[in-house]
Length: 119
Image (cartoon, rainbow, N blue to C red; front, top):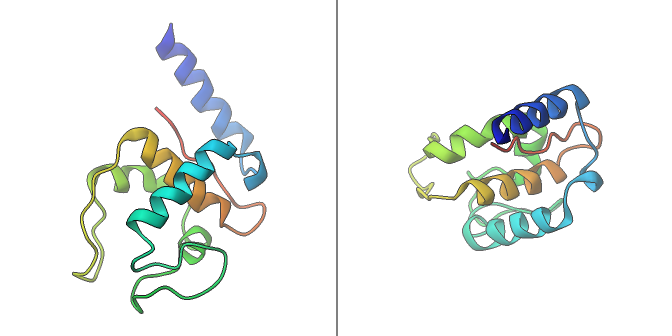
């Protein structure tokens, strides 16, 4: 029964298409922002403006504009491989990944944000 509910829910998320960040869960956004502050802000600009401390680390708003954030879940789960050696490896739980991706989606240009797909 739970699997059927999950499949139906995932299908509805795909059908619904882009969502405005204001429709994302406030608690998830706050959790995602907290994760970004603790684990990512040492290099990346994690807000809607400003520069990050590391010149090669793209601002989160640029990542959200360039990529379908919902497709990054697997990369976060398996470990992101990037073109520079300074990116630390980190491990996040499923809920943490969803929250971080929800926060990233909230930074995307209006109308293009995709909420994280949850399993």
